[in-house]
Length: 114
Image (cartoon, rainbow, N blue to C red):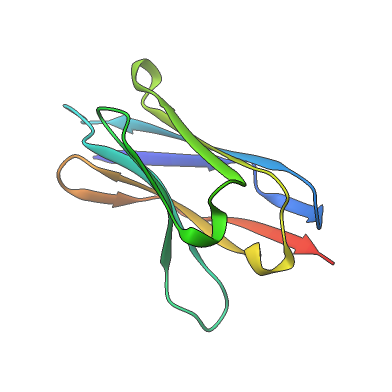
């Protein structure tokens, strides 16, 4: 059993910043990749940022230069620092890990007001 506990969502004005964190626990031998996806109302769930076990990162074009992902392997925790937030960043953000099985967090709401 694997649990993902997310924190850090909330309401922020456009131009503001938020930091999300996600801690994984349970029967985890190794984590190949960790990341964040988001889903806005009426839209599909899309990749925001991903980081592999070697530190390689991948970002959605819409967040490049504004968001930064990193991980603490000792704590099985992944972080997402979000700057210069825009109303279009409003969504439920889901933590994701691949072990190689896929696991998802429960989601945390990020709302950016204009």
